[in-house]
Length: 315
Image (cartoon, rainbow, N blue to C red; front, side, top):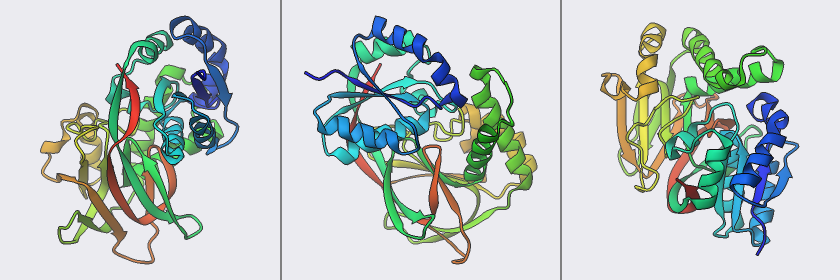
C-alpha cells in the first residue's frame, strides 16, 4: 500500500511554511506516521501532483498550505476520477476552509485528525468562467466563489504579499490583518457591481451589489463567516448578496461579517440554489471572480453544485 502523499506549498503563509517545514515534518511523523512529501514550485503544480498521486493509487493526499493549495489539491483529486481522500494540514494566510471543517492550526492536533479522523463526503462547486485569455475554463471549488469587493480584496492581499508591503508582521496575525486592511481600502475605493443573476430556473434578476458570494463552505476573506448556515453536504449553495450600502456602512458592519450576524441587514440577501448564472449588465465590463482565494478570470460564469463529490478527512 502506497504511503500518503503530502503536497507542500513552501511559499504559503508568506514563505513561513518553508521556514517551518522541518518542525512540521517532525510533528507530522510523530503524530501521524510515515508519508511522502512533494513540494510545489509554481502555481497549479499542486493540482498536477495530486492528480498524479491519485492515479498511482494513493489513498490519502494531504495539502499543506493555505486555501489556494487545498483547493488545488482538491482539483487534482477530482480531475483524476479516483476516490482518493483529501487531508488538510493548515499552513496559509486565510485558513477559511479548515475553519468550516473545524481543523485546528497546530500541526500536532491536525496530524492526529489525519491519523484517526473520519472520512466525510462533501459537496463541491464547479464554475465555468471566462479566462484571462477570453476562453471558457472550468474548475472546482470547495469553499466560496464570489465577485465584487472580494476580488479586489484578494488582489490587494496578493499584491501586498508579493511586494512585501505587509513587512514583518507576526506570521499568525498577518492573515487576518492583511485581509482586514485590504477590505478597508477596497470599501473606500470600490464601485458597486451591476450584474444579472439567475438562480436555478428562476427568472434572471438585475442587481447592484457590493459583493455576491456563491458559498459551499461558511468562511472566506480571512475569517469572515459569510455564509453562517452553509452545510458542506446539503446539495445546495448558499448565495449571499450584499447590496450597494456604501463604504461607511460596510466598514461599520464588518464585525458582523466575522461572526456571521450580517444576514439580518436589510440590504443583505440570502438564498439556496444548485446553479447560479451571473453576467455583467454591461457586456463590455470585466468583472473579476474570486474562487477559493484565487483570481482565475471573469464573468460571465456558471456555478453548479456537485453533491458528495469529494472525500475529506475530518475531525
